[in-house]
Length: 292
Image (cartoon, rainbow, N blue to C red; front, side, top):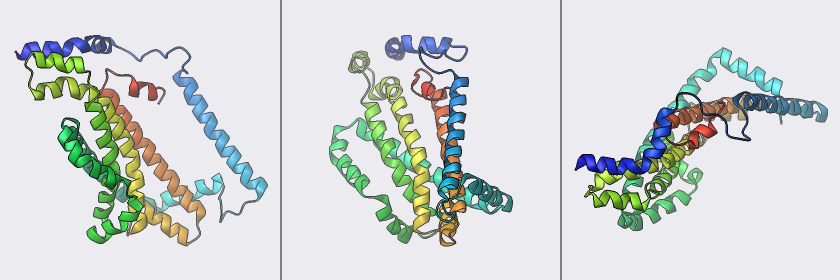
């Protein structure tokens, strides 16, 4: 019976998995798409254009560096912060808050999303309260989290987890309910258990949605950690931004923003790489990652 159920579940996906297994190299770019080399050249060219416009706009308009620093001043501030070793400690603390908050929020969102996605009763009872909590601005409740959990990293992890939680939850619910009805009925005709239906039909169809939610969550985790550090912290990149703000060091603030952007890009790329390895049968993440 188990083999029959497995064959039934595999039949609808045979056309999708077979070509994926036969791939031995990178997929050719679709018609009209840019090649990886040209895409990288355009990215670099656009970056150079933005820096040039930024620099000459500051020079021609004679903007004070206290208000809006130029790219050279930001680069010098970044190099000085790295050479002094000041930024390394704060990067480690913020990165811990990001990853820990993302882990807790993602796990909670996945578990609750899996339960709600398969139970209309739980959706009717729990989901309205989840949406109501999500509509509350996290900046407004962040001081409460600091009051409850203290000024250490715990409050920042909790704030980050609450921000990550909802996109993972919502995408998990939508993904589990995206499974084709005919495949579910076919599995049930073979007397498959609810667990077999979940593992062989619902989960494979939900994984692209789940990873989309995780990708959104890992980027929002950076915002959550900084919001928590703004409210109350003794270390971290958000705390460092506040210090630079008090000393009117705009170039230093921009330098820290560059570091935060790099952290977000690296985490986003890692999540895309994991998604391409796990859900290899879909091109949803492969197309977005071409040339990266």
